[in-house]
Length: 165
Image 1 (cartoon, rainbow, N blue to C red):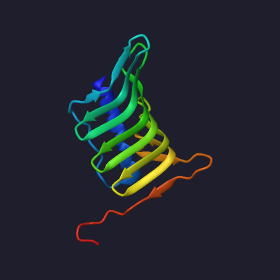
Image 2 (image 1 turned 90 degrees about the horizontal axis):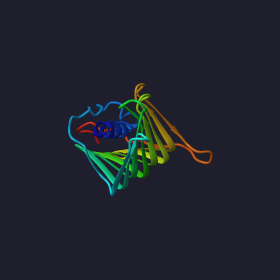
Image 3 (image 1 turned 30 degrees about the vertical axis):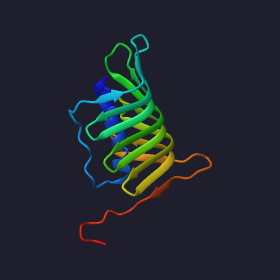
């Protein structure tokens, strides 16, 4: 299960990189241990899921995921993860990168991460926001969508090279 949470943290974090900083190197997978804390953990072999609830904090190295509920769904008759869902004040932080949303879903087989509801990705001062941000990890591309009444918003600050003003 910790490997599953590790994938989820890494992929949530990668949302910030393709959207905001194409020239910055992607974070590499880490062999560091992961620590998940929550008020409660409920695991169901029959339903093939583990549910962390109440002030969930998952840490691995310099990556931290915060949410109210983290559900890990396994595939039937296999020991592989199908998808992960983080719900309630979802926030992923690494260095100067932060991704927030009401809910996040990662589908492992397709390698697709979707941030739903008030989805925002920050890197430094730059920011991209929409109602939904979908990251296609295999294709290294992202789509930011707005709802019927809103618009996608991006505020991008060029990175200055040393010595520039």
